Structures are given as C-alpha cells and as structure tokens.
Length: 267
Image (cartoon, rainbow, N blue to C red; front, side, top):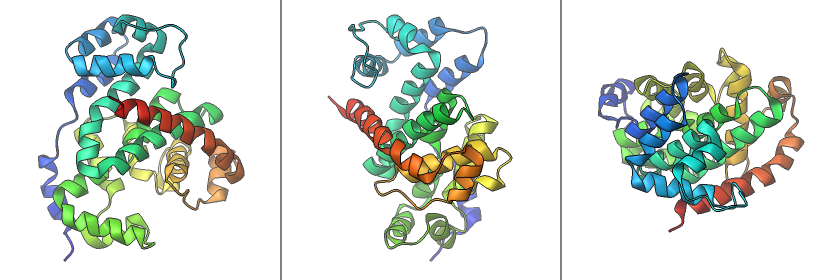
C-alpha cells in the first residue's frame, strides 16, 4: 500500500528541527558583523562539539604541522566556512545515522567532499557552500523514513534491485526525497541556493541554477560505492568536465572522504 503525498506533507510538522548549533552557525556566517569570536562562543556551549572539532583539526585530513589545542586557534587556521562545515557534519550525524543508517551518513560525507572538490575544480560555486550542498543533498530521505520506515525500507530494496530511486519513492509515497528535501530546507530556512540544489540534484536542467545543481548531481553520482551512470553531455556542458576526468578525481575524493569519515567515527 502506497503512502499518499498529502500524508507526507501533513506529517512534516513532526520532522525534527535543524540542530540549534547549526542554525546559530549559519546565522553567524551570513552576518557580516559577526566573526570567529561569535562562532567560538557557540562552540563553547557544546563540549562534545568542541572536542570533535579539535580532533578533526589535528587529523591527517587537515594536515597541520603543529598540534592545535584551542578552539580559537582552530578557528584561526580553518576559517569560519570550514568550521561551519565541521559543525554541520558533527551536529547532523545523530539525525542522519538514526534515520538513514551508517550508509547515508557516509554517503553524505562523501558527497560533501566531492562537491567541495569539484567546486574548486570548476569555480561554479564557493567551496564552503558546496560542502554544505553535498552534505545535505539527501535530507529528504529523513522525512520519508520518519513518515513510514517500513515503506522506505521497501524503497531501498527496490533500488537495490535496480529501480531508480526517484521512481521507487514516487511509486511508494507519491513524492520523493528531492521534493521532500526542498520542503525541509524551506522549513529550516536554508538558503535559496541550497534548497534549489537539494530539489534538483537528480534533475539539474529543471533548476534555475543548473550549473550548481549539476555539480550536486555529479558529486552524488560519484559518491556511491559503485558510481552511477551519468549524463555525459549534461556534465560536460554545465561543468566542462568529462566523465573520465570525474572518475580520475573520484579516487582522491573517496580517499579524502574516508579519512574524514574515520575521524568523525573515531573514539
């Protein structure tokens, strides 16, 4: 029995709010009058977050020569955007793992690193924004899983058997994670750019921002355990990258993402 799309919409009010520390961090990033002092004050209220940031900044992922022992020093070295990205990754981990499992958490990290990497290569969007786009691109799956976990498990099975995920979700829910992610992004008051990429990461040419949406599309495709088939003409036209180039980049992206994943799951 399928779930009616309206039922999903009716229940979206029950979806958890974005973790408060992320809301505050994003607010500071957008406020030109704020700086690292305000960001460090947010982190001071969350010792677990502070500990994780220090662990990451001292990891091989960032590769600083000296040991960093204070949040203020970490912020000075990382900058506000990189620190914001770490805050998002750490604070969203409980929600992603509880609703999507370890695989969704790992895929989100991989896609974040891939988006950041491809943004640096192409210049179509700021690398800091790209990380957030990649990390949150699948948040609509949280909505569908909360609405009906058993039905969403059937979707996962259908996808494993070769069905396109959007088709499977539309069949079982009369909506899909891209549309639900867009609604959740609006509820969380995320930026127009981020909401747009979440909605169109499977259909970039329908976006009013096709280049950035294609970046999310390509990053998502190469971030799976087995890379998905891509529209080569689309990627070449929007990003000026060939599929063979993407596959070359993929090895480094996966290595970087796996390093980040290991650090965030250590201890």
